[in-house]
Structure formats: structure tokens, C-alpha cells
Image 1 (spheres, one colour):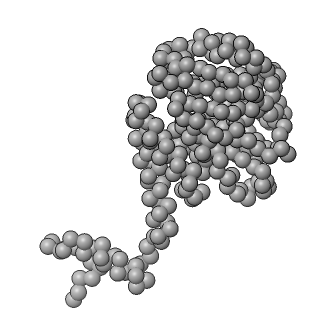
Image 2 (spheres, helix red, strand yellow; image 1 turned 135 degrees about the vertical axis):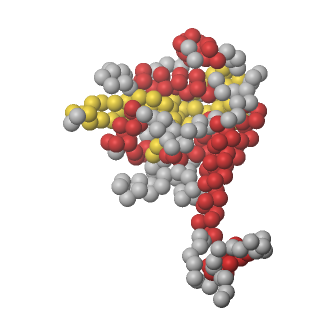
Image 3 (cartoon, helix red, strand yellow; image 1 turned 180 degrees about the vertical axis):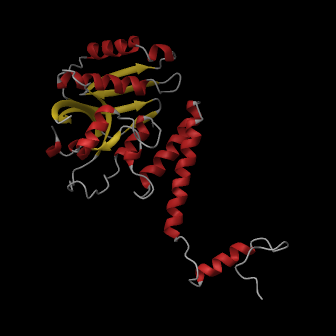
Length: 278
């Protein structure tokens, strides 16, 4: 009696089990993954591998090519492999009209399943992806991804312009603190140029002293409170951002225990159609 399909015996040739399985798939006796599914799994594994390498690397010169590989793969792959909302702080603009998503954006903006934060010159590649279709929300051809910069706290009364200036400050603290030694972070805010030199002290960067320093730079440059800022010619170290970006703040009603409460959501996005401006 033949041994086809049974357990391998001692002395079987290498690869014999794989050949039997392949033959069964070819003849329809066993179902195998399609080439497309294997490709999807391979890309997911590649993203996960890069994410693990990034989380264990701290040298900015080694991190940069890893960030580039990750961003290029994530931006170019299909929605079956990766969607931007898997990353922390990235959601669709239309999600702000959904109470569950709005609550997450206001209370836990870093709730993404992928715990990775990209430099701004790579993060915009992710923001440029189209928002996947969702049967739970109406189709909006002008929908786009946004990067959350913060929100008003529960019970806090804050003007939109003030909240938006705080968001701009947070953006500059976050990305000016990530440039390599000896480099600078610069950008044009509403046609006013701002340059922040490298700050070698992480202790100062994470304290109010560094925030105060940035506020002083903005004041001297003539950047005042506004509900919308246009960012151009961003340069993070040696890397230029060609795209035009916006920092904006919008107000939504968030229902807590059945009671509506105004909440302010600040975000960064790429240049959007004129009809979508708020």
C-alpha cells in the first residue's frame, strides 16, 4: 500500500512533503493560498519586520533609511495590507462626524494598532493615501486623511484660534525634536519663515521651557492666533517636504452621557480642495 499523504518516514528525501502538498493543490485535492494572498501576507510581514527594527533602533542615521522603507511600502501597498488609520493619530476627516471615532480622536488620539511615529517628510506619504470606502459612512470624494495634533480637554473652554496655535506649537516641538544633531527644522507659516536649530537636550525639549522658546520664536516672526495656518517649504534636517500642508482646528459636538459638549479637534492635512475649507 502506498504511503501518499501519510507522515514522512525516516529517510524521506528533503522537500518530499512540500512536493506532495504542491501536487495536491495543483490537482484540486487541497486548497492553497492564491498568489495574491501570499503577496499580501508577504507585505504585511515586511511591514511588521520593519516596525520591529525601528522600535529597537535609536541612531537617527540608521533610522532614516528604515523610516523611508516603511513609509514607501505603506504608502504604495493595497488596503488589504495597510490602511493609514492603523497608525497613531491618523484618521479620515469624515471620522469626525462619527461619535465613536470622534470620542477616540478627542480622548485617545494615539490609539492606532501600529505603534510607530514617522518623521514629517515620510508621514505625509501616508496622509496622501485615499481613505478606504466604508459602508458605515456616506461616500465623500473629497475625504482625506488627517494627522491629529490635539483637542480641547473635557470641560475646558478654549477659543478655536487659541487651540490652533497650541496645535502648531505641538507640531514644531514634536518634529524639531527629531532632527539629527547639527541640523535644523524650518518651515514657512503663512509666508513667514521660521527656523528652529537642533536642540541637543532632551530634558529641555520635554519641558515647558522649550515650548516657551518656540512661542517666542513665533511671536518674533509675527505668527498670531488663527484657525488655519498654511505650511510650505518644510525642511526637516536635509529632507524637504514639497507638499503644502495645513494646520486647522474644527469644532464638533461630542455626546457624553446623552449631553452634547463642544469639542475642538486640531489636525494637520495636505492641501485640500477649496470647497472643503472651514
